[in-house]
Length: 477
Image 1 (tube, rainbow, N blue to C red):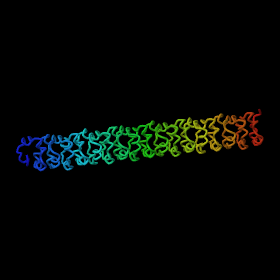
Image 2 (image 1 turned 120 degrees about the vertical axis):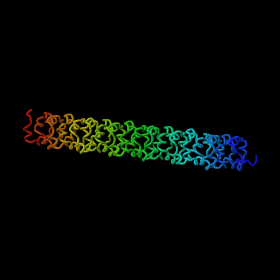
Image 3 (image 1 turned 180 degrees about the vertical axis):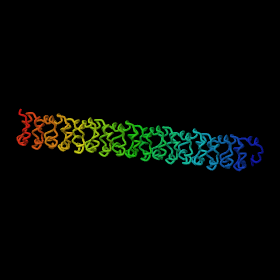
Image 4 (image 1 turned 90 degrees about the vertical axis):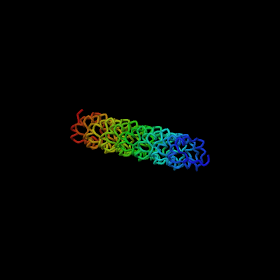
């Protein structure tokens, strides 16, 4: 039927009665005679019969007039032939009518041409059917337009195909709607691209699902943005994966919220990286949970930063794990805070590392808790630093444990402070090591408490140094 003109079709019944063969055979010029009102009346079978060249030539207003049923009848070949101008002209209802096959057939240029309002009406099944190339072609504006349901329908392959800009464009509601499997599908570059606002929006279950590689990819700003609930949701494997820079970036409130099992999971390098402010923020329970290896990795500045409550919460094994440099770094207030059981747990090397100021700070209870081995390990300077009140409370077994050089180092004031029981506990070797000045400093009560064996042990120079008052105090036996 050459020279066919749609304007010669007078009724709707006549129009809808046109055969599909006729529709297909029409030339572009003949099809151009179709009015907008007539386009709206075409049946789905007639639309499906349109030749691609005629469909492409269809005016945008005529294409927009096609029924939703007609649009759903389009084949993938017909859909591919649509120009971007025609895609833009599609109504929201028409886009929603596209079949999944038709959606998959859309070119990346056609995908980009979809208006955000049109994209938002796609079914989740249609969104899930998009190829990775189509997803990667979405503009950031289109990504913003995605509903939470659509975002949640993305396959892991689609999630992995998102560009960093697209990831950033995801609204927080959409991001939080992702399943843990989708979160795991994010590449490290995508994770690193998340804004701090997006990081904060992540559910604790999503945070806990991150792989070690994803955790490592977090920027320090992202780590700092983590909430306490997110921080506590990290698995021990994730905690161990954190870099030292990330550890430093953890806010003190987040660090304080970590469980003891998470603290134990920290590597020694991570512990050593903690700022003094972070160390101060540790709870007593967290401090008490540190392994001996972690304790040993603390820097001197970190040890000084330990609060007295935290220090006193340490077990004897933890205390014994302190290096001599760490012990020497303790403040006098920290030394005073040590429990007697902790003091008694110090090794001989640790005791010898105590500064004279620390020794001076020891309480009488701490001094009397020292073992005889610890007493013997004290240097002569440390002996001199012992306050007389501390020396006076030493048990006779502790006094007897002093070496001859330690006894000889006692000041005359310390000798004066010795009790009669302590003087009587001195070994003959210790008696013989006393200087003339020390002998003179012995109180008459202490001198008279000496046994005959101790008196016999006195050297002639020591005897000669005795004052007349001391000689008078000597017992006759």
